[in-house]
Length: 208
Image 1 (tube, rainbow, N blue to C red):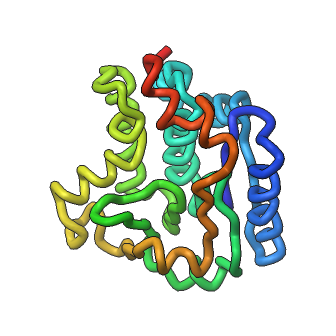
Image 2: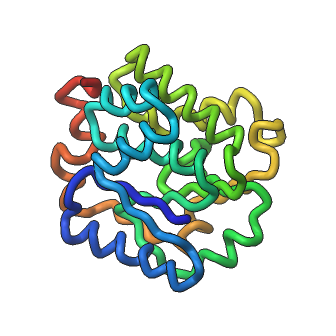
């Protein structure tokens, strides 16, 4: 399964990038994109009211995307690719050879843009999901990266190490290696507006 999320109708340039993942169905993947209402229904159906309420408490779309990606990968093995990334090479060969999954690293931080989990109910994904829900409930910071974003996996990696049971079997790739499969786009027009989480959290509370 390949999962993607955009809370409403994506801008044209984002829709074009999402289409590159939809064509991965030709490789044998099932592709599903979710908007706000579809993601909420998915979460409520599979995880119940507590996680659904956490989703509703997210005041920034990126937070909802974070929470949804963990729910999706905890439910079904597959790939989560951010909507503003593009697929540039077949990903099925990569997916088939992974033991447990793939995490991308920027410098020493785990990144969320492109995540693969090959096992249903993966313990790492479920732990990240658990902490994200608790962070939202506790409103621990006005910082998307820390509350629901890659700060969670980064903190776990620093606490436990990549040889621990929590991470054993995951491959860690630098961005330059992931670029063989994924196109990253830093200069899309929406990223200069409040639609981008970095900008929105500077001027508003990130919780509803």
